[in-house]
Length: 407
Image (tube, rainbow, N blue to C red; front, side, top):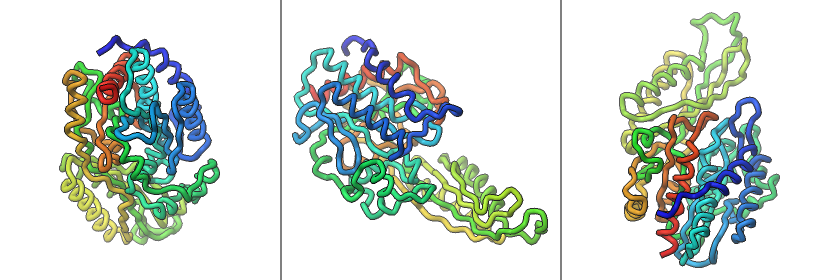
C-alpha cells in the first residue's frame, strides 16, 4: 500500500458538506429526499465531479454519477454511497462513503495510477427512506426491484407524492424505472460505510470487509380502537389501541431477544392525537432483522400473534401490512475475498443494516468496506469515526480501486 493520504481533500470536502441539512437544535441531519437540503447535497456532488474534470451524469432515477473514463464502456468499477439521512441522523452514515470515494480518487491520481477500466462515483438517491417510508428507492428503481407505479404511489407524511416531490425539485418522475443497461456495464461496485456496530472496535483494525447483510424489512401495524373522552370513559368501557400498541412494543423486544434477532418500533402515529382523548387509531412501524429469513419470519409472526391476542382483550382490531422486505444478501465471495487480500487480510464481518450495495448485489458483483465506529452508535448525532480511521478508510478504498481498475 502507498503512503497514507494527507487528508487535505477529505477534510476540505467534509468541511463544506457538514453544514448542509444540519438542525441547529439537535445537531442531527435532516437531509430528506427531494428537499432543499437534498438539492444542496446534490449541488455539492456535482461541484466535486466538475472540479475534478469528471463526466457528471444524472440517471433516469435521480442517482448522480461522476465518471473517470467512458461512461458507456463495459466492466466499470463503481464506488460511492448516499448523502440523505434519517431524521436527526449522524454525519457519517452515507456521506463518509461519498467523500471517501472522491478522496480515494484524488489519492490514486496523486500516486500516478492509471485506470484501465472506467471508474465512477455514485450518489444514490433516497437511501434512508426517511421521507417516503421505503429505503433505497434510487437503487431499487435502477435494479428493477421497485416498479414505477409503486414509486408513484409513495407519499410522505404531508401527503406529497414522490412524483410531486421530484417535479418540485426539477426532475421528471415519468422517466423513472429499471436501468439494466447501466447496471450491465458495471463490473464491480464497492461501497465504503461507517460500521453500524462495534465489531471492529474489538480489533486493531480500522477497516473491515462485509460478508453479508441480514434479511430485514418494515411492517406497518394498524391498531383500530374507539375514540372517546379521557375524563369520562370508564377503564372497563374503553377500546384503547394505545394499550395494544404498548404491549406489542414489549412483545417485540422479548420475541427478538429470544430468537437472537432485532425488532424495533421507532415510528408511531396517533389519531386524533389529543391529550384528553382516547385514540381511535395507533399506527406503528416495525423494523425487524435476523441472521436468516426463517428466523425473521418467525419473529415477525410471533409479534403479530401477540398483537392480535392483546387486541382481542382490548377490543382493538389489528392489521399488519408488510411495506418492504430485503432477503439475506451474500456479497460476491470472489470480490469479497479479493478485497480482503488487497487489504492484507482485514476482518470479514456481517451487518444488520441495509445498503444500496445490498440492493445492487442481485445485478452486480458488490462488496463493502466498513470503517471503525468506536461507539457503535449510528442514526444519531452521536455517530462518529476517528480522523485516523477515516483516512485509513480512504487509503483502503484507494488500494481496492487501484487493484480493481488499474490492472
